[in-house]
Length: 173
Image (tube, rainbow, N blue to C red):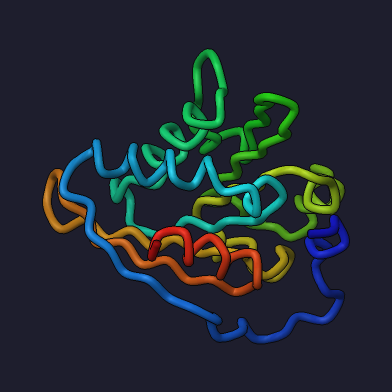
């Protein structure tokens, strides 16, 4: 996948329909960790844009923490709620974890250099992506997490690119 894939269009368009969907259940945090390890093993995600959807407390940040650990990120993994983005490096892979919850002004996108980040190689993970939808590219994969109770989650993966479809196929194997 080329870096040009992640440059957002100048004219906003409607979101495309997913090419493929997959539903699954997580019964506990170990299921979340196992899912994260499977994601970490998928080479198409090394240069992908993945969006994370769900209510507060659904488990988006927990999933990202497990995923970053599985990729080899060391040290403290902070939520980017106030910083908007937290950069990470693991085994030569650049990773950016965004949280657009407090993102209000599209001018922030340019001012913060996010266009350059999305144009560069690496993994981009975004919580609350709908807050920046006008300026972000189409996600390779959207992960929707719904809390059923304190430990169980209903998860829907939607692939919007061929790379995303390849990843979903790995979960079906």
